[in-house]
Image: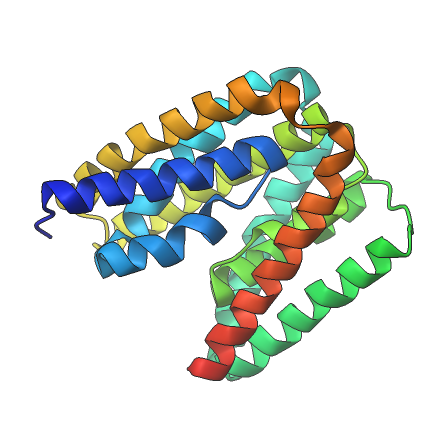
Length: 241
């Protein structure tokens, strides 16, 4: 994978934009950056973007570490493992298009319920279930953020960002380990991910500077909007396959 200087700059810029959104709202880096990166060079997805996303997730986890709820977060991370296995089995048993449509519809239904002001308390069991669903969705559609974001939507901003970042850190490590063990993550992919991570650091830093101007009451609408956008992306992929 030979990248020109222009491609490296474009890729880093796409990741910076995604990191800015994720660091302000809690998730959305892959949703924003992945389509742009695919246009720059198809091999920038999924390996290099996972590597750069890991850096951004770790930065956000550390910055918001006071809001971490380890018992609930641990339950979600544990739930991600069987969810990923179930997702892989479902891919073998059912058409991916049908799965994508089902999960996109589920996300949109959850967003509609959220707008009705139904309050969900993120207990350990519910976080485990959300982790399972995220694992299934991550395996079947490569988008795993909405289940966790919807579960945590009523949390205080710092706590929401911290636990989403912690979950994404674990998910990215699992994804990179899987790609590496299957030979799909070579040195060139790590190098590209390193370049892109510099953009992620810039986006994170910009979000840190802008966070004082980002009102807390904007967070939940932005989160629901991104979840809806994620569902639409999944639907577009399903119908264009």
